[in-house]
Length: 212
Image (cartoon, rainbow, N blue to C red; front, side, top):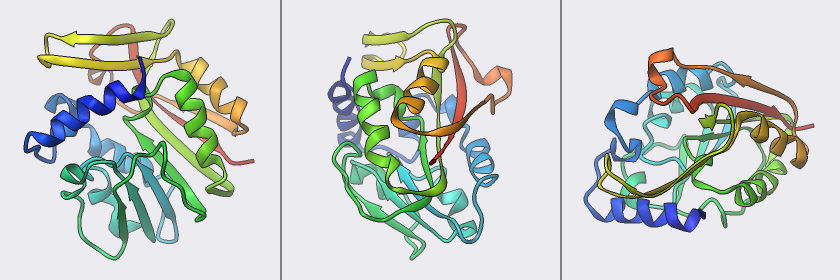
């Protein structure tokens, strides 16, 4: 599985007149109210955020007026058009694998995105953005991770009626990947009620990692 497979999935979705919840894959998985409240535990009026793979702004639209500024990086304009138009949000329509900026941020958020990269790819993503954090700044990544081992989905999904690709790495492997890159003080948090986890072999976690 490679990120290009997942990009093709989202590119096809973008072509088919998506609504603001299309990026949630299944509409029952919209937990963005909880996501927004969780992010605001680490952000305030003076916080500058870099949000990677922002989608349709389901989270950002709930927090932009409570922070200083958000740079939202989203590959597909068909999704980012739903993000609130405000001076407090700068939208950049680029792939997060190639986006570059010299700006540094208090907080970098990656919600529901890391499973669409294989392990080698995600290591490069983490390394790419470590230097965009202020000293002591935090990266928060939230997604599904393997409970006992890695879980990979690659191929046709009966539920979605299309090809779908994800790699749900074991939670401790992902923590170790962040350590390899140089992040410190890494925490894992179970931020959803149990009923939000549909599958026994994967589980939603947030990982909070600090710039050294």
